[in-house]
Image (tube, rainbow, N blue to C red; front, side):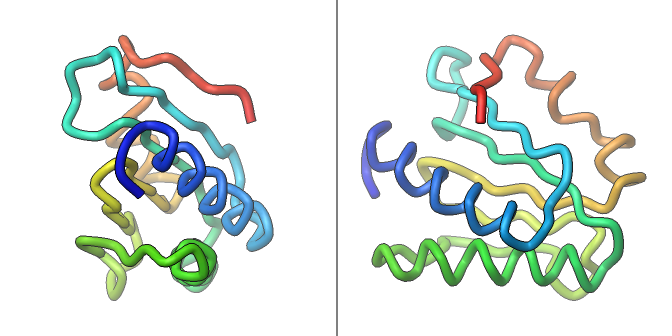
Length: 116
């Protein structure tokens, strides 16, 4: 899924899967103009560790159907913050308190929020 167009398609598949698993407060940050190491962040929240893992599983399954596998998955066992890195976009699945603490939307304040 190289390039911004591929990243957008992959991120859209991830968003749909996250929403299907009842992810809350789904936000997409466009980082293409922010001198970042990726094009998009997809950020969402699950209400408990089992839901956070289910969201992460659903995202990976949906994107795998498009032929892509993540370069890296971190935090799955602990499930406070699961990071799924597809190079061109990164999916962050948080528990509510962890998302509040790290506040990626504020940290990347120069990024453009994309309407879902």
